[in-house]
Length: 91
Image 1 (tube, one colour):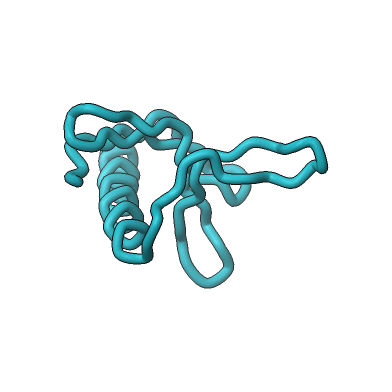
Image 2 (image 1 turned 45 degrees about the vertical axis):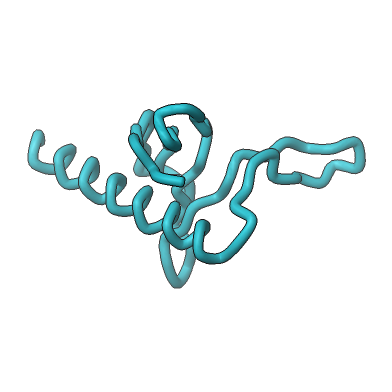
């Protein structure tokens, strides 16, 4: 499965959530609302989720294995840092 497009849809400087991203896989499937989160030790991605009846948040889409999670995270963060640099250069 190949990542064929990544769109950084929204960026913010406030709070820990830094961006919202959409990812296209194999030009056939789009995953919206992946969040770029700035943690205490590193920046990471959070998959789209929703709250269940018990009030817990559960991912509605997620990678099955660590290899795919790493591939997604590396590609998304690279695109995020690229967009961040473009935004800084525009100022």
